[in-house]
Image (tube, rainbow, N blue to C red; front, side):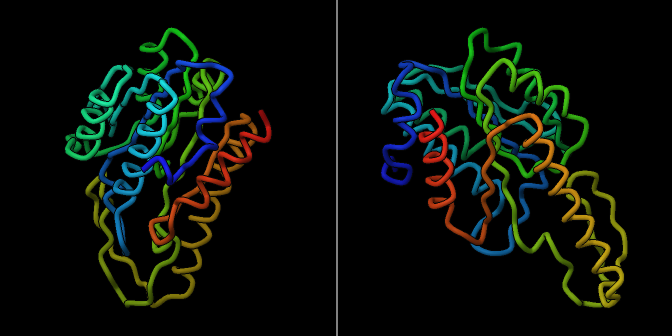
Length: 233
């Protein structure tokens, strides 16, 4: 598993031993979307499992918060292989009870839980609003990294005529005429705008981020991301 990320992760934290890595993973219903090999949640979980194994090689403490519209599971930071195996078991077996997403609640909990500066990895599709304040606070207190998990088929609507669309979190259903180019274009523009707003927000706050997709290997984007951090530090 460590080979997937290799030395770059280790080198980032060589100067400060025994740091704390806090994995904050969105397991809300919107993450259950996936049209190819895996869902967005599956991808986020696999990446965080890889990071957890990489961290113990560096003798770091690793903790976990799983969230939806509330905190679903907390594994306080500890060291050791046994602890990481427990953490990974929780990653793969915990099912959400909430219907929505609250990034703000998750970050607020982390800021109360951790007294010392930590590396906080936030893995989410970021289909949420009103989390800017907690994002800023977390980034000021910790080394915050955002992993943006996408599925390419969410970006466009297929031309299938009139179809029902159900919001996985609100459970509301509406009918959409996907045969209308105007409707498809409006949907696409809205998705593009939302992605740009998130990108601009993270850039403005100077938060490191990496984008991964369910239809592509995450290894190269993750390696490039860590290498950029290595070169910067």
